[in-house]
Image 1 (cartoon, each protein chain N blue to C red):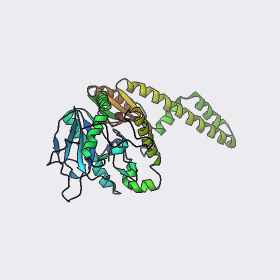
Image 2 (cartoon, one colour):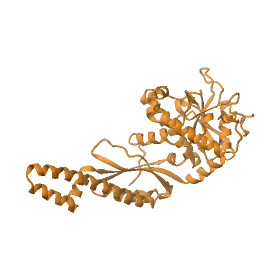
Image 3 (tube, one colour):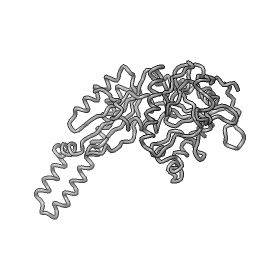
Length: 96
Length: 275
């Protein structure tokens, strides 16, 4: 049996992957809508427009998940954070 | 902060219509420190190029710091397909990529340029990116969905199950009122047996498929919209030169009475690079 990637027959499979999966990066540097960073947007959100989804709370769970993940990631890092404000310092320790 | 994102021709700070280019749309991270342009192959014809850090690079295009969003499904589809085309191109060129999902756009922070944010991210996540890169090197993702035809499976269970056979005999010998009760019993028994059978199949197929893959993930099953039922939906990470073995195993499952298999790919490893 040969795998297929025929673009018509596998559009849904493509959407499942491109809209829900992939590499995640920390939220501070990601473009956001109404304060929520866009990471792994789901299809309905993309179709209906972010604002609408936010209005109806559809993305809240997802947003909480991302924030929790981010908190965890911060906790793992040794970068000193500004006391108490919960934000990664903008003056990063990296240079490019 | 000196930013190395200085390919003037390909990364103007202003778009043709004068809008400010203050974001970088990310397609994937490639296994190469090469600084190169891939041409205007991005979403809406965006000029795609790499932002390198050491021996890895982010594949990006310059765009306003706003998400791509639309209520037009066709437009979104077009964007997603363009996204995938770029990831495919990079995958082909560099052999190993870590794909990002649609609409991941990095912005600058304070006075700094978005490309600095991209570099800072590559630098901060470098170890983890390299680890992920090693985990998917030489491999591709395949989608495996297994369906059964509900009617055919129910029929074969009815024919082979002793318990169900007994209930059927009872129905025939009972008066109409009682027969109704027994019919309900029969339906319940059949439902239970089908669930048991689905579990068995899942375990059996899982074991058979696992032999041929490096990693696999169970995804939510979905209704295909006909009388078939999806009993498994897997994402499999497979050595590129071993996909034929997986194909043969799936062929055997596909030939089983009442079962069918969908086998898609090769996909970039979307399901195996997440957090």
